[in-house]
Length: 444
Image (tube, rainbow, N blue to C red; front, side, top):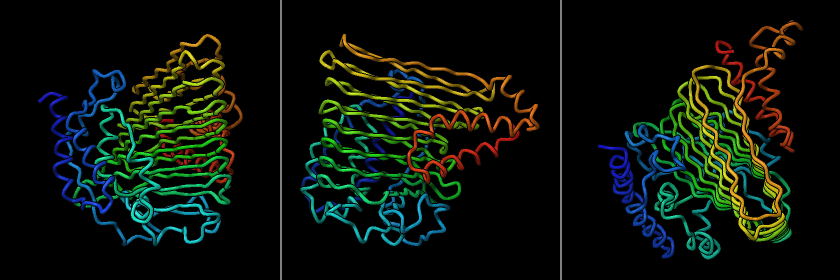
């Protein structure tokens, strides 16, 4: 069986084996959305390496496994199942999802100010379905975005955040997606929706973690909508099991004068792919997306960016850095499209990689496609090793080789981490990267 046939069979089996686990909702538009997505999955294109967006990505290992949707939420969980928190409980609003289902016992959202709606998408679809339908029921997913369609086919739960006009959320929102599996490989498919109305502001920290060596497929979709003058700080930290497969799609729309500032960290999972797509619906919007990823032995990490400038006077910054210390593979595929009418666009795209071993692979492809003539755009990429002069300098000051390597790598990472304005998020990620590097002394 070739890759295309194996992939088609895999998607068909996922639909057939799991759809009976999802009880029909009392909300008619939700049932229609799910059914429409299932029909689209049956005809959608299956990704293969012949497709440009997937040319560096093999899905053979995924198509050889079977995944089962976990329909019953896990309840036997406590704080000990999540090793660390970024914030103390009293300093944040907290939500926990286990295999895509909200766990109220570990969440802290009982008191919310100023009509903010924060909680389970499933609950909101029951109590206020019209608030959700205007976003999800009208979803115009590309007919070939098969993983997003697969998520649509089983929409059930996920993060829901709605901040009314002019409201500033007084504390950060920390969301933990805890994934685990037992006898069967779990299929985890949260669908999250974040809406900031005009002038609203929020800080969102999302963490993706797992217990032990859990083997599962995480296929999450996160839709972000920023109205005029809204401001969202968004931190995403993926540190999952070395047997996990992780796929995320982040779709962002920004209205006039809105600001989006994001940091994406990817250090876990055997295989991970993050797709980020942004478009502007108003002028003078700012989209600032930074990322840092590490790659160890037998690990595959992929970032795929698609920023669409279709209006004048908007700004985007995409800066990603990678540290490769194992015989794995890193992929960065970033594209900025500037339409003919998008004059005065200011866009920069950069990908820099630090290669610590010889038998690793990095495929990097930053792209600019420009049809306007009054723009300020740039793109570039580098793949390099530790500068021997820098290493010699630190060794001459008494540092052993692993500590010198670690210090240089942390300095390289800090040029991304310094974009984090929240001190606790910064320190949490910095400590995490330092611990990862400390475990690589044999390589360093």
